[in-house]
Amino acid sequence: MDKKIVFSGIQPTGNIHLGNYLGAIKNWVDMQDKYKNIFCIVNSHAITIKQDPNILKEQTINLACMLLACGISPKKSSLFIQSNIDEHPALAWILDCNIQMGDMSRMTQFKDKSSKNPRNINVGLFNYPALMAADILLYQVDLVPTGSDQKQHIELARNVAIKFNKDYGKCFKVPEPLILQEGARVMGLDNPKVKMSKSIKSPNHAIFLLDSNDEIKRKIKKATTDSNSNIVFDESRVGLYNLLGIYETLSAKSRIQIESEFEGKGYGEFKNTLIDVLIEVLSPFREEYKRLQDNKDYVLNILNDGVESVRPLAKSTYDKAKELVGLL
Ligand code: TRP
Image 1 (cartoon, protein in one colour):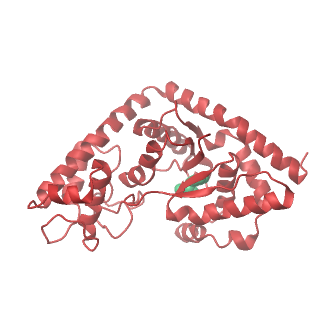
Image 2 (cartoon, rainbow, N blue to C red):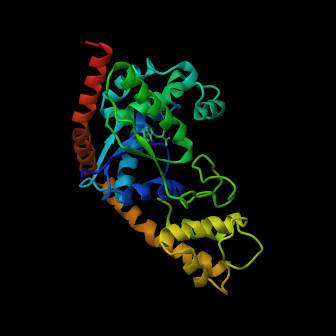
């Protein structure tokens, strides 16, 4: 049986942190044998927020380096840059003409982002979900891995695919969301009540994949816990629960194993063990990232192979949609 096609998108903005890695990238790496994966660096989505052009270019390539360093394998998967395929915005236009203002206006992420950027509420930001639908529908995708914040956008992509197929004739596969594993939600180290985020600038909030071993050590040592001392999974002890969740995912041990490992031990020992595991997992990524940074041509070649591997499908889907709506 053919493997299912999975499409994942990630924006090239800012440094990748542990929340991005455990919440998305690690899952992507792990599913490379099970599915046929298409990984897309969605730089066209990134310009819905004002970007410095040179920094955007740099971050796009840096993200490719980081994804490869984390284990995305060009032998198994396609990795490409969204803006290298013109059919993305072209299909988004056709979809635009088949999405009602009322449906688009319900998107909560637009409301959220526009209230955070009141001086740049551009049409692209409003239209973001149509471009995202085009990303997915161009590749006749079966599954789209998603966190809860993107569910509404995937629902919109499904609805426009269903309506288009009904109105004009079969053109798109209707994708299903693939809900990512629990335990993948990493909270801020200094404030475990909020999701780890690159836009929170306090120095001990997030661990970035490029942090040095000393930075990792400092941030874990400073991480908020509570005045209890036993090491157990208790959701009400948010700080410890977050750290244990990170340890659980990285060590692949069960909760029972972890609780017995730290029975009779305190925060100090637990934190030291967590620091060791973090360094063991993250430092090879950092080294491989540096190696790739010094071999940009190799990375550009991979991106080029990636785009050529997906282009025929993008073109055939787009040509069909164009034909069906009557564009010459
Ligand atoms: N909107 C997604 C995010 O911010 C990124 C994205 C763009 C995406 N196009 C996509 C994700 C297509 C999945 C499929 O996380």
